[in-house]
Amino acid sequence: MMTGNAPANAVVAWRPKAPPLSTPWTHLVGPNNALPEYPRPQMARTHWLNLNGVWDYTGRSGQAVLATLPSENEYHERILVPYPTESALSGIQRHDDQMWYRKVFELPSTWRGQRVLLHFGAVDQIATVWVNNQLVAHHEGGYTEFSADITRALRAGSQQRLTVLVQDRNETNPFPVGKQRNGPEGLFYTGSSGIWQTVWIEPVRAAHIDKLDITSDLTGFTTVSERVGPEALMDWLNEYMGALAPEISRHGGVIRQYAGDSIVAIFGVPVPRHTEAEIARDAVNAVRCALALERRLLELNQGWQAAGRPVTGMRVGIVTGEAVSGTLGSADRWEYVVVGDTLNTASRLESFDKDVHPPEPLARPCRTLIGDSTHAYVADVFDTERVAEARLKGKQQLVAIYRVLGERKLAGSQSSQAGEAPHATPSVAGSRFPREVPE
Image (cartoon, one colour):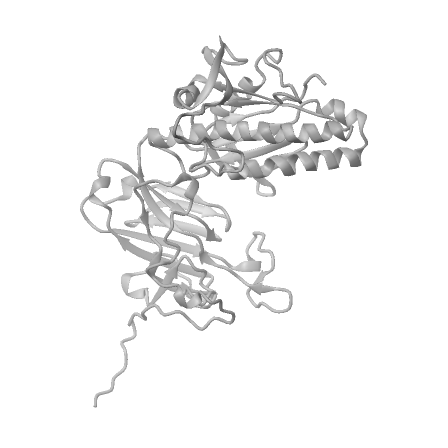
């Protein structure tokens, strides 16, 4: 019989810890099925690489934190990504103020000549990312996604080394942490630190579409607010928003903000769209979303008229193009925003000549206008009519404007109806709805 001690720098293989509270599926989770699905189904790409699974790990706290990247022999543990370090499934089951992750991977040979994006679904709280020891990203915020173009940092024909530093001190950080505490007790609970959503990479083209921004703005709101009391107005708005918001979600949108009588929804954030097929699919779904909103608003108006309540209409403008999303503000208050000329053009398109095909609350309550950049992708799917070629307010170039009449009924195919979810979200476009409509 022989006995011996493991060397000081021995690596501990990944094993799940005993969970304080388990489910019937806990024991089924392992390195081969750690959230294997594409993390954003509405924007799924054919080619991508999931980096979830077992990573090298070393955690530090207090005086033991590192000022530089750890050496290879300092990664003594293995962690299952994307589970918080405090969880049993991570294999760590403790909180570290400083969390170092390392992953070695190889790029598929078919990706050569393309840009490569690295995506993180969420990392709590401060994340710094290196690829082959080159800094590629820094992000603050435990609940928001972020991405980086890592093409320049990649090494041709060799393994790629991904290093992530995560810092999270729970209540000692200057960030909102809810009830997470370093010493959970009573109504406070264990934190969720580190990488806790999927990490993946995918090849893209240099030029790509990012997102769609839709703003829903009620017509005649000022007139309605003068006729009804504040409480009745609030009930009316809530009924409107509660009915239209699910339609936006079903078509892949995310409600970013309720602003007075408007709904601001974002599509395609933050993962960009790149191929022509993806952009075309997104444009089709954007128009389908507008048509679904019209059907739902018509139902509302019919019920409101029967109850003697105000009816309304809306205008929609959709333009396909590029936009940028990010945080804007100060250290005391910031907001997630989407900016770009695409959104400005969509706003101008929505307000184009309000006397042309005005909304009819009890017949066609929504006027949907699309620009030529969108029409190029959807002309074979929807019936449209050319409205004008005009220079929109504040714009120098002429824009061809089309009105959407409805979706074509093609033989042997089924169009997407109001209750059906589309296969992808709209990419970059914008919509605004009017404030004035004849009663």
